Amino acid sequence: MLHAERPYPPRLRGPAYPAIPRAREALKSHINKLMKLGVLRNVGQNEEGEVTTLVIITWNNDKSRMVGDFRALNTYTIPDRYPNPRIHETFTQLSKAKFITSMDSLKGCHQKVLKVDARKLLRIIAHWGIYEYLRMPFGIKTHPLTIKE
Image (cartoon, rainbow, N blue to C red; front, top):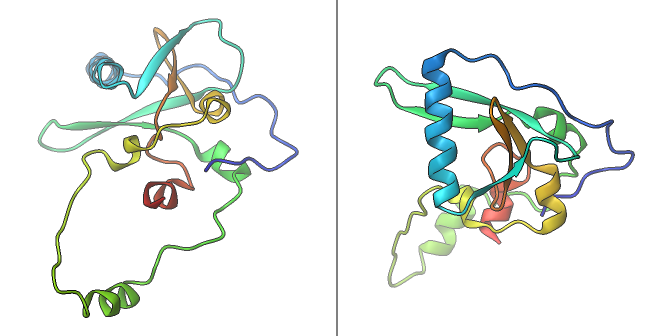
């Protein structure tokens, strides 16, 4: 699921990225929503371990998305050995099907529950606290195959 190579990097810990008040409010809103959904939990200010910073991405229509900057962690993450299936292979398999249905998972990454060891690697820092993902966040190198499992 999420395996880091050894030697692991020095502690990844830094302050939250600077953010304008509007972005801070959006971050607070996203964090509160994810906590209500059971995706995040607050671990306080003094928790030891790795943390990554948050970035807020906004679109023209004032919608936004919260993303953890997991680039440093991804450089030490062991990639999955099994690539995603090729689309033409999938269509070949589907050509023999009698029934075809489609389902979409809302917030697909967040459907996968994380193991306790992985949670310690996936902490995020905001201006008012440190949070830990309980479910897979967006932006992890191995998440596409994790969702498929």
